[in-house]
Amino acid sequence: QLSLRLLEKFEAKECLGQVYLVIYSLINGWIESHYSSLEPLQFAYSNQMRCGEIQYAMMSARQYCTHMYQCGVELSTVEKTCEDYGKMMIEHKQDLFYKYTLPYRQASLNLMGRSKDPLLLTGEAMDQDALLNDGIGS
Image 1 (tube, rainbow, N blue to C red):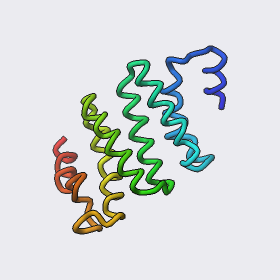
Image 2: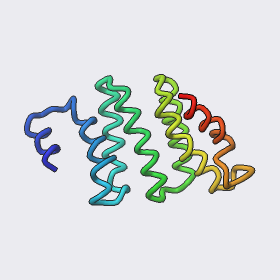
Image 3: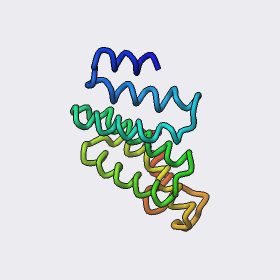
């Protein structure tokens, strides 16, 4: 709350998205449900895109997808949102955040019955073995 009040007092609009990202992805979940963070994380994404802070915008988008999945938003909505933000991440060469979003998209597809084996994160969105190997090799 203090950081939000300071932003308002000093009219530091260029920092708003970054502060929202930290508050609503790391702190707010200990106080409120993830559902309450969805709108602020979308705002953080939009604000940072307007300010040209692409990396922070993509972090906000990734966290938004994670929270959507965790708070029980309809799976088809989660899957589509992950796909849409994933395209933006690729377009802006934010591969790391893209890779972090893939498991939520594939898990959504699995839970909707759109994979051969629902116990594996392998299918339309990703291949779990390839992602693991890529992570180990990095």
